[in-house]
Image (cartoon, rainbow, N blue to C red; front, side, top):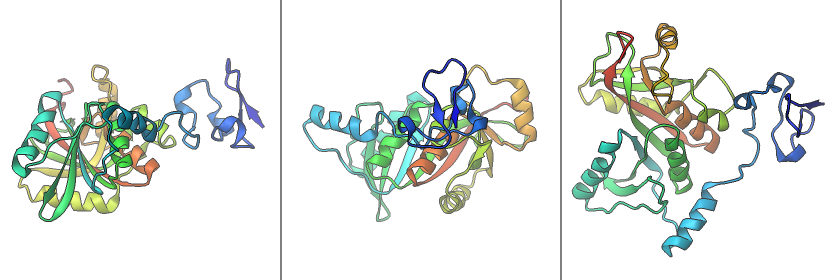
Amino acid sequence: MTCCPPGQRSCWRTDDARHLGRATLTVSDATPDPLLWDTTGSPSAFDPEDWFAYCTRLHGRPQPTVPPLAIQSVINAPHEQVHLDIVARRFGVRPDDFTIAAHPFAVFSHRGQDVVLATSPKGSYAAGGLDELIALGARRIVLLNVGAGMGADLPVGGLVVASRALRDDGTSLHYQPASRYNEPSPSLTRALTAAARRTGTTVREGPVWTNPAHFRLSQSRLDEFRQEGCQVLENEVAAAFAVGHYRKVEVAALVHVGLSLAAGRF
């Protein structure tokens, strides 16, 4: 059977996933909206290894490897280099910008455990940084980012461990078939929750709302998703969970509450 969305020249076959090298679409997926096409089973035209081959030629050195335990910091731009500077000074290591894509990282040892700290700009770009980090060797990754508290009982300065992410983004759909929510690694999330609670600050564990459209945070969605139980609005978690799902690695997320939308406005 062939399903062709209106105006689309090349059709998708529901009885042969190999047709044109693409993933199978069901009849319900035959829609003119590309975001709803499930192509997660289709090979990519560009992989991290392709980019690394270019970086290797450019730098004249082989690609580095990083330890399995990783932290990806997706904090506002003025603070990104601060994290690497702290690690560099405290542990005497030098950040590596091998990928020349605004995703520098530094490897250090903490309590006998090798760890890599990587940084990235916010939004959808962070998913590419996470994909690169995984291709370099990371297997258990904690995402650190900043968001806006959605309820009056969540103070600015608190922490939210994401139990799942409401996927109001677009990037995650290229890594994981469409669903309302996606989930992190249960074991890594438990460990992250325990560590966060040892900080002494307010810590919540619950759903987060991922929406990278900074100036289109509709109040109707804010009200709906608050009632649904979402604790915080942020930009990256759903995509990070989807990348982890696709690459078969563990990902968890910790969101710092930097401001509040409890009153419905910034």
